[in-house]
Amino acid sequence: MRVCIVGGGGGASNAANVIRALDKEATIKIFTNRGEIGNLPCEIPFVLSGTLPSWESSLAFRERFYKEKDIELYVNTEVTDIDTKSKRLIAGGESHSYDKAILDLGAVPAIPLLPGLDGRNEFFLTTGFKPAKAFEEAIPKYSTAAIIGVGQIALEVAAILREKGYSAVYLVGRSEHVMRAYLDRDMVGIIEDRIRESGIELILSAEIADVKTEGEKKHLYLSDKKLEVDFVFFAAGAKPNTELARRSGIEVGKTGAIAVNEYLQTSDPDIYAIGDCMENLDMVTGSKIVYQTATNAARTGRIAGRNLVLGRAVSYQGTVMPFITEVFGYEVGTVGLTEAYARKQGFDVVSTVTTTSTRRRVFGGKPIHIKLIADRKAGNLIGAQLIGKELVAGKVDRLAVAIAERIPAHRLALIDTCYSPTTGAGYEAVTMALDELLEKLNSA
Image 1: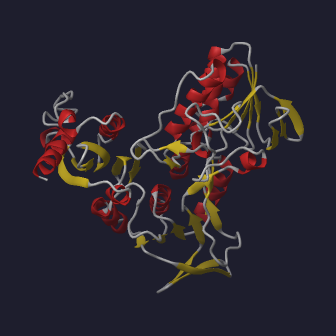
Image 2: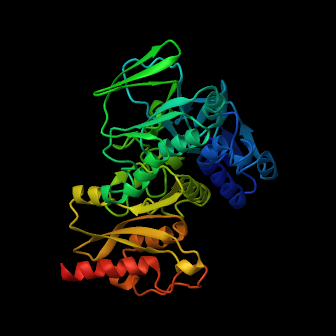
Image 3: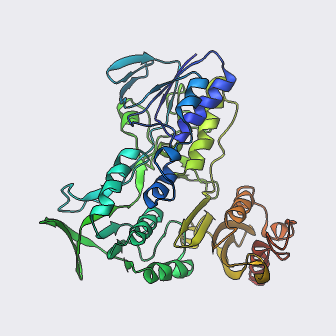
């Protein structure tokens, strides 16, 4: 079997690994327009901050892996066309035939359509190294910056610039609060306070009327003020990269991502789509969404790889959108729906916010803030938000299973948890939050 994989992300490498394990004779080719393959995009900020010593240290799959698996790599090679009838693709001007193909096209930055943008001293990040290296070279040359966006990447970049001694950093967002896709208004105060304490100016509910380059400076004109900075960094989100799919006649869904069935097949059953470019299923609402994370890319890569070789062997059930990041000294973890979004979707919501401790204070426990969101009628969780300085990820994973499996809140509250004084609490934080939620559910 001849397999062509378009895209060089972790999903592509995971898919290739599964295919090779199941079919020792398959010819596997991976094409990427980037100069590297198998890097971890989430680690790019850690290279920029100096936490990781080099770009190579963020490569999860190195050249040796592909050689051992007998996988042919084509880097700096753009796939410009896919002829689905003849099953051939054009890459770097050359034709390659395939029996099955996988699209791991990733996402592209969503750059706001602002008047006055001219490409000078305007930066962004993608999943590849090239824009990141350009930004890395620029950072030590300047001392002031405006960051457009108030999501995860925006906050990470703002923290990096302040750590590197920038005298002025502005976070400018249209949203009324930071990380709106993940957190409700009643949970962001602790993060916004820390942002301001770090010396970053947070400008929310902002509209940018114009951008001008004047001399060596960038000028941003807001409704009530003008910002003068050395450069502008865009972190206003990302959209699925679907241009190749559209040109090839592959269906794109209403979300703007490539439409797939439960086996990750596109409208052409011999072509699969995975990762950031594919349309996902929200397991809570049953609606189609765009969900872009490294774990989802790896998971869908493994599923597509199995189905490509074995047929419709594994179905993709969708996602409950688990997420975690570390910003300004806090771990922020979420899963499921925010309360604001759940209400817009018509849920009769019950929510609680609990502040407790990860462990007993004598063993170094830290405060943790937990918001639980439940469907009043069904009595099960549909969302959760956690902010603390430690032990957040494991709690998010536990809640993700509960939401995906629709475990009633009263049952989840009675499930045993492991305990040691140095690693947790006898009255575990999520269980405590569940008890408070149950009181509210039962009294409603």
